[in-house]
Length: 227
View 1 (tube, rainbow, N blue to C red):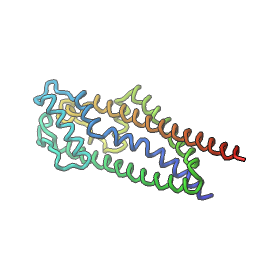
View 2 (cartoon, helix red, strand yellow):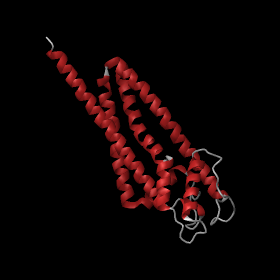
View 3 (cartoon, helix red, strand yellow):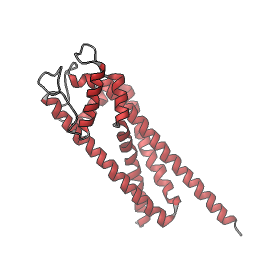
View 4 (tube, rainbow, N blue to C red):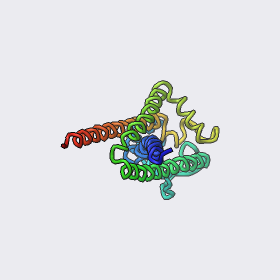
């Protein structure tokens, strides 16, 4: 198989991976998670105020992304502290999040390198198919994700956790401090933001591919018209 064809296929795969990974990093960014926490923390019947739970949600996010300096009120009472079981789960979450973060960076670097090589060998037009096809694949998957979230988010949430965490390790009482800071509506909001960000990035890739294709066609037409 010709080297250019292999690079084009690789660029398509990398583009398809980059869109959802980059969208996940957008979803996990401090402004987004803080905004969702402000909207959805559950302070009803809790000894913690709305502001304190928002601060805890921000700290959980920081801890889950590798910041050991983030303050988490630990203890044995699940209603007023992050228990050992909850902390263990957050460490499991950290592995998943940091792995996704590293994957996003590696995929982006590989995509840039592959794109540069394609342009050097075949010109800017060589990026047309990788961008269109690489954007279309996760776009279809994001549409299915949005449908799954809309039909039954609870089942989707459980299945997703079942893929990454041991059975029962992520289940906590509804009135636990961790769940009050990060209730199910918070995660529904995350899912919707992730889906919207993925769709947006996919559409940008597809539009970019069509733009490059049209520009390349215009340039070829201009060259042909020159006597």
